[in-house]
Image (cartoon, rainbow, N blue to C red; front, side):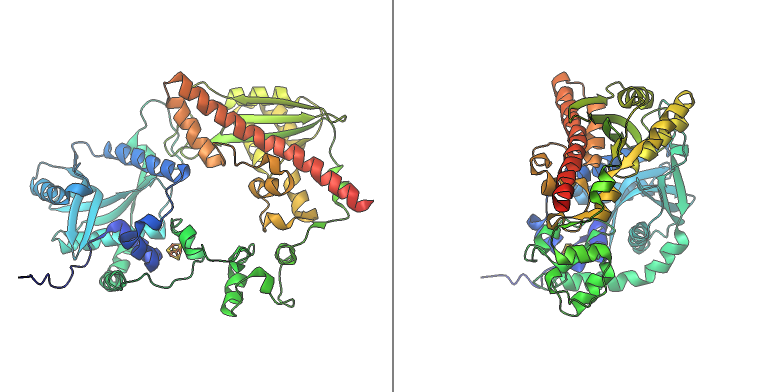
Length: 496
Ligand code: SF4
């Protein structure tokens, strides 16, 4: 005899799935029914996740006597029971990671703080401000809390205070965090939640992922890890890749135009968009003149910075970018090349060491080639932080020569695909110098590896990380050398 299992129970929706569903219903569907199609988190995403955890633990210190519900998602029923017991105990002033559920939605609340007979609902974020997604996050938690029989005394976001001046030692959680009262904005979102949940359940029960075109919504508020899956069948010159053109691309798509090659000739486009559409190499007649404006020896300078939600050094603030490394390839008029570099390995604030050593490296002569204005910002911030070196550092700023705007205004290669970042430009113009062979391929990963390296006690592992950082920073400056040389060759050959 077989037993009729009855209608399938709708899957329980967690808070994070609810937020995924608000961003994109297809994302929600895939996360629950085909999670294997997602790209694995990269180092940068993992580092953000780790930072969020570190912030969460620090936040607990602001609520002395608080009790953690440590049971993970594998032991939900124990977590629910334990939370209920803690809420019933008047001696418990706060609960961390409390589990509650209502209407098929399970939440884990970062902090429930007792407020007389009621509770304050507090979500902790590493962010420096309140964003719309945080309000949605608080709204679904408030919905569950109310449904479970606890009308919260208010909904709050606890986030990083960007202006906190870290004095050293243990960070002070009362000053490191700000707590914003979001009760009113959350209240406005509450009435819409039941309908949204119903809609999400019907999507999940639909038997197949909804047809949703990938677009700008895939990157905000969070980068969706199904991007590679959803765009796998798109043409190489998909209209979405037209630069700076969310609206233009959308309008063209609505007209049935799916590739950049199909854009009608009369379509109004910017200079950059026309270059991408025309898809041919273009060399401005003024390129050679622009490139020859430098004075030898030409230094090619790049800084890397470390940034952290919880300040690393006394006297600094959350998310303040601090230079911890530089690389300089110096080219003399006869074409000879010399490389100097510095990676600060001490656990102290790296700024003084970086400022002194970079001044020595660039000396008093020659142009300093950079790629973007970020080196100017870093040098000015060093000048502000170290008064005795201020004039020297500002003199260096006056010698900076930015290759990026020269390239943007005077050259285009089809392989740039509309992007002028070094990571796009180098493979096209100096293929031997792309970043494929490097462990570190972007600045955010460099910052994360640097922080990991400082805490690493194994000497061999520390050396390996230092080597990876050196290789990454040196690649940027050697890339600039090759870029200048290649562009000059092309400009001269076009003129002859
Ligand atoms: S990539 Fe975009 S369309 Fe695809 S699931 Fe993610 S958000 Fe939705």
